[in-house]
Length: 344
Ligand SMILES: Cc1cc2nc3c(=O)[nH]c(=O)nc-3n(C[C@H](O)[C@H](O)[C@H](O)COP(=O)(O)O)c2cc1C
Image 1 (tube, rainbow, N blue to C red):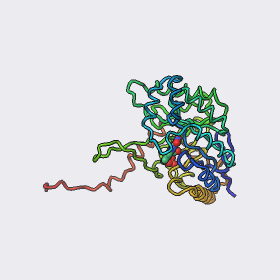
Image 2: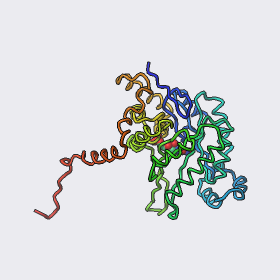
Image 3: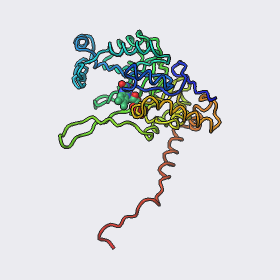
């Protein structure tokens, strides 16, 4: 028997595969299907501060600094048939999920004001979240803010949430940081229990017919795994006490095995579940177990991080060497030698 039990944020999980926030984790029916398929834990869709109902939005205008950008962001949100939905919906989903599921339920939060981050983190913790994932999704478009300004503000924010709630905290990071390892270490130093690598930034397109900016949401493929894989391997030896979750690109049991070898404690899936349904958890788990059996691993703790250890001594030199090796590996002989038209 292969033991695939894992630990994440101090929680005991029956499997290292976790459902990442997406519509797949947004209803009790789907959450139950995920549990039935063997998921280790679920992360509910993020509570976005902009979603709060109009009444509380007016109240926030008076309470919070930066309320104008908050109201402006809210006006960009799609208005569905039900109108704006508030934190109440998230709290209801969280409480209902806690009532019916036996696997850990992690709440996710994306605030837009300091007050909002603190208020909603406390609300989610009080509603019974086993842990909270702080989704630091923000496109830093203000040219007057330096990288240090942005990082410092994020650190202070996370620190305040840390002081406010007792539940385990994870931070979902952007891949666009100048010094990811340093930021990760500083988060660990202020008491963050886990890091989720990485947020996928959705890039809008332009419709040349209507000349409008249009949203383009493309689900990931296994090729997207490599960026978080590299960073999990870099951070694992440097932050042994912090839980690492890989998100982006994991589709199959082979992808899960790669993430564990790099040093991830858990592997999160969203696209694969949206494409194939909850059953993909079971399929990936069976593939993982088959791979472990074929490679003589009896537990995931045995294989975890065995590849990241290779890069542990000199991470920067190791990454440089890998870069040069990668450029060098392109088969030049395969490049077609095209004739320029009109020349002999
Ligand atoms: C339709 C959709 C909705 C998502 N909603 C959230 C969300 O509410 N909060 C969040 O942190 N990530 C959200 N994500 C990002 C996923 O949780 C995940 O991090 C990302 O899709 C990369 O993982 P994947 O390659 O398995 O899809 C969403 C992704 C999709 C496709």
